[in-house]
Image 1 (cartoon, rainbow, N blue to C red):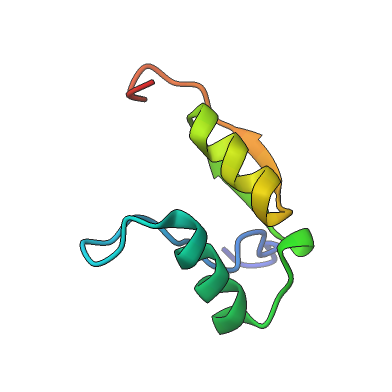
Image 2 (cartoon, one colour; image 1 turned 135 degrees about the vertical axis):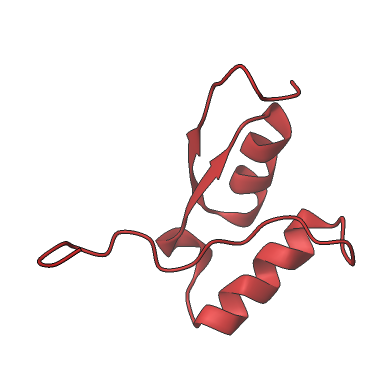
Length: 69
């Protein structure tokens, strides 16, 4: 959009190659050249909260009717 502010730099999600979210997050930090403390993690499960706490990210929990937990 013309004149808009970019709020999201990158979006990472599950891949068929890796089920280890911590490893994927660490790789994303390296790829983007950022620290976990500079990242907002958006998740929908208690597992996402644990991951964010473990890696040092802030977290936003999304509650919806389509989540599995």
